[in-house]
Image (cartoon, rainbow, N blue to C red; front, side):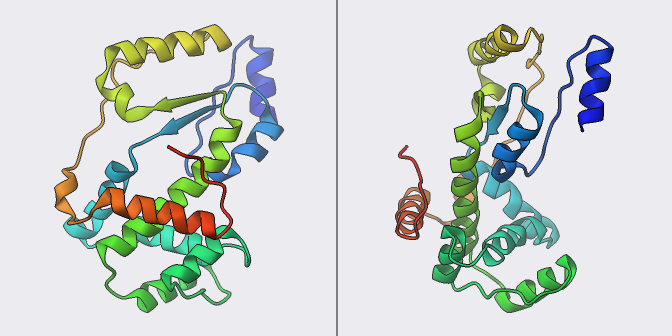
Length: 206
């Protein structure tokens, strides 16, 4: 990574990196690379419905099961581990990712939408609690997708801090009907936040 930074600098350019599934590593990434860090936010309901859609349409449970895995494999004594215990998630035995994945898949069987959303939302909240603390700018991607004024404000914010010109006019996100799952999303969210805090997590209000 440092080589890419050096190569860009020697060419008189600015390196721009994009990381997926990196929210919980935001602190170490910023310490290692420096620079201006942007955190992208999505509506958790829409993001979870996207994960769920693969199970419903294709029978693929990968995206949902990964959130169960994150909680089930969390370090003992952590807020994530305590939350996993509250959900009744078994801890996979030592082994490869595939072996642990298959163990948890067999152990959970056919899970409910509510259990899936609880697990997803816990990972979402715990991850952003870390990432937001190290963000120089947080972007609401859902709002970015539909509001020209917001796109312009974000563009100006990035330009003023980095001198980079970024065009967001092609940002478009598909949406899923929340009614596809018979959940009281607000009630579940309130309960998840309360349980996470009781497990020792620092979840900000709002």
